[in-house]
Length: 359
Image 1 (cartoon, rainbow, N blue to C red):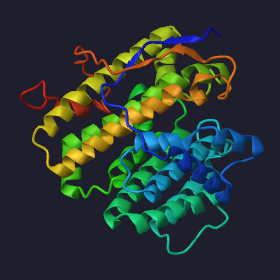
Image 2: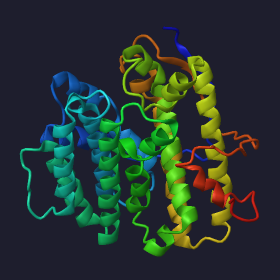
Image 3: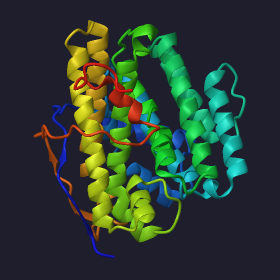
Image 4: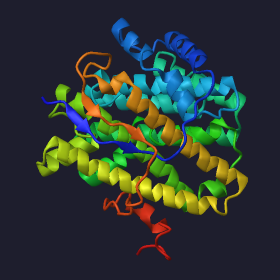
């Protein structure tokens, strides 16, 4: 197939990185070996080349300590390994019954970590280790937020197993939490130990900002992985937003990319407007929470663009999966449209462009 060409992608937020990403990377490799989170040596080498330490350093540049930063770097490795093994093309994805049982075990391991209930499940044991370390370095409220968002992660992966050809509306809902979509932005404020109250967390504007930050990263990863996925499995499970648009409409791959980019830009425009509106009267805790979402979005996008996992067809080197896709901080003022997908369109109820919520 012809190598795809991506347009520039805009993010107006500043670049930041945690200062010890190399040490985080060393810790990740050691932790991966401890829990044997790979199927064979080839898989181990591929995971070791992902750069989870750098990714965590980009997403959580203001982490309160090296120990806390390491937790999130290790979890990032866990999520990539889990995705390889259980999701989309992983071996366990071909056996939904076994996969669902294993995920139930993993979730239970972080709900009640006092006893290692499933020692034979290395993913469950590794996730329990994450929970125990969060208990040590953060607060019970922080830990409970991790447990709850992880439950949503598993629920969506189960949904993908049983719904391989979703509608666009269902695809948006599935993509919101798949791949840890809602876990990673939640980690942002935990990494800095921001003591934001649950009542503030339930503010619908903050809920919308959190979901938008999550969605932008998962959709952006779809853009940059689309070429590789096309070369590998063009007719397989359709959870990539670009692939779904292309197959449902029959337009070209580049036209589907352009449509998906347009939707992402309109979400990004709403995020920036709503962010600025909330920050105008925000408490220090809410301000710090929003800044953690900013870091997550910019850092995750920075990593996606620079990482060989997406740029090359084999995820390492050689033939390119795409050209272009340069990150620019110049954000156009024209991104004012509404994305008409019912499962996410509620975000526009809080658009500052409107004097009252949209009916």
